[in-house]
Amino acid sequence: MATAALGVLLIAGAAGPAYLRFLFQLALGDGLAVLGLMVLMRAGLVSFGQGFYYCLGGYAAGIIGTYVGLTDGFALLLLGAAAAAAAGLIAGLLIARYREIFFAMLTLALTMILYGLLVNNERLGSTDGFNVPPPHFLWWAPAADRLGMTLFVLSCVVVGVAALALDRYLASPMGWLGEAIRENELRVEYLGVSVLRLVLVKYVIAAALAGAGGVLTALAVGHVDPGLANWTTSGEFLFMALLGGTQNVIAPLLGAMVLQLVRTYALQYAPYLWQMILGATMLVIILLLPNGLWSLREIRRREANG
Amino acid sequence: MSVSYVLEAEKLSKSFAGLAALVDVSVAIAAGELVGMIGANGAGKTTFVNIVTGYVKPETGRVRFMGRDVTHLPARELTRLGVSRSFQVAQVFPELSALDNLLIALGARLTHSPWRPLRRPELISQALDALERFGIADYRDYRAAALPQGVRKLLDIAMAMSGAPKLVLLDEPSSGVSADEKFSLMDTLLGALEPTGAGVLFVEHDMEIVARYAHRVVAFHEGRVIADGPPAEVMADAQVQTYVTGVLRGAAFGRPLVGDARA
Image 1 (cartoon, rainbow over the protein chains, first blue to last red):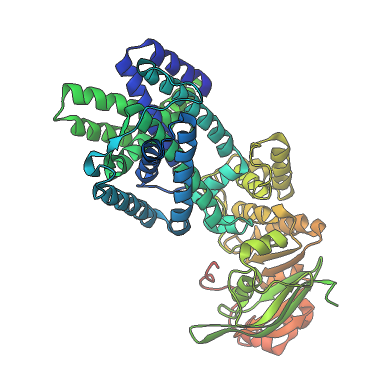
Image 2: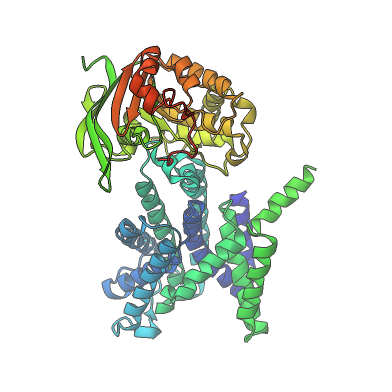
């Protein structure tokens, strides 16, 4: 089903107007970060700092492209995700010891530190950021008017593979131990499993996914700025996770898609009201569908079964 | 000598904030042996269980499991070696079904095949077998939080047994279970544990249960072992009757007013 959903998206993006494709493109980049967030939320951990790794991935792609001169799209994707994963491993050694509000605030603190550093760094363009050179893919450099479509197809494939891999991971014993941590850490330790290590692994997975998402967005937009690490970015990822739900790997992607749509149209038709519209959407979701849009499907299924 | 015992605790001492919780406690348990541990609240029973399972470190003394010194191993490594425990307040995953609880307990050992689903036929049938052994298969689809107290305790113990441990420590298996259910709970429980050949130590306040099931009884008072032997002998001991069972004081100390801290 995940494959079918992405297939529809691929066709819609490819056949539809360019602005719609770009909107989907942004949703896919965000979607990777939200998939990572889902892994943490399933383990009862709410990160307010996915933007840290998203920004790190984007800046890594930009810096490597601009200053190292390596502009291979595949290499940038791998390096961006690896940089985020490495940072996640180091930060995770501290953060994985904390829970609840302390976990959330530490992740937030980290992303605000990065934001501050980038804003104050003249060489990296301070608040303006800098342009990311257009990528090529192995020996093929797509023409400027084909680049958008190329990146979109690549993004669909990357997100598709990530979603399928995550789906298997979450169904595996290691994935289920996430639910177990959320429910009772003491029992998990007394089943012979290190809770600290498990949380660290999940935190690094989330970081790598956000890093890859950041690379895709940076390449598609052709520009990075410190706003990627601003706390509002992380807040939006949480918003998307709540909007879509965390029961299934499609749900966070759905959340990312819907938020991008709401934002685009709200900005277009009611530029001074869009945050209010966002707030109202969140309110309605929490009140009526606390498990996100995905729970509509389960409600329908339950009704169908009588 | 060290070969025949699964557990040898030697001269364990521990104090909390200057209060001696355990003083020079030595207890050994053989494979297949069923040892009851009695004592008033604060006598040191739970501290002993916590030290043996790696939750608390002793100040002096050492713990040997199957002849190996395990005094300084953390709880999860002891669990992996084959020391398992249940808790006075059942430690389960409340929002998950009884079956999923057990599946996770089984899956916790299978980290070498990370890509295979947890809910696969052979694991499900293993989990159902375990639920069957503990007589709670009818509750497989109930959320653990919605289970009757006795069933939840059995689930907790079934999860503790999932790794085929050699030594099992049960902290008050019958607490919170009504008087008319306690014997059937213990029958089911010990019926499931006996074939495994594991050494079992159970902390118990209910003297009827101790007298009926234990092969041996260890009595604690103020952090010391005051008696260790066959049930009839220990129950007849003057110190035990004074400090533990309350027979000599004429007071019913058999049941605590409040439970021990859970861990």
